[in-house]
Image 1 (cartoon, one colour):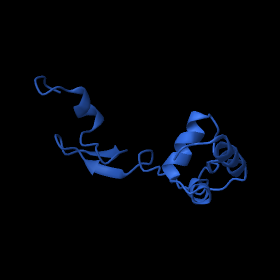
Image 2: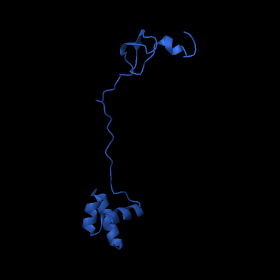
Image 3: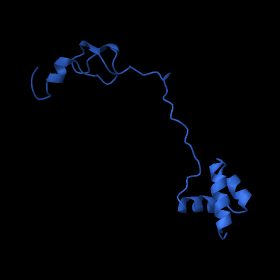
Amino acid sequence: MIWTPNSIGRLIELSKTKLSSTKIANELGTTKNAVIGKLHRIKIKNGHIPKPVQLRTNKKVSISHFKKLGKKPCNLCKKMFMSYSKHDRFCDGCKRCSPYTDC
């Protein structure tokens, strides 16, 4: 499409009415991409108002990492110890020991 001063004026008018780019293109007899490109080149926004971001307030926070899971047997010494995570496998005494020293 060849943009004449009349069509540019009509484009600016229609962009202020908050119509979508597709509807403006249908009014002017051109494509949506031509409308978007021309609005971009003449530095006019098409009245796009983004939706406000809403924070989710009803989202449940998992506290499974912070609660005690219960007593488990240590994988090394088989003593029962309080586990705070599903990944706890060794009691505090065995965590301090290395495999090369006597505990």
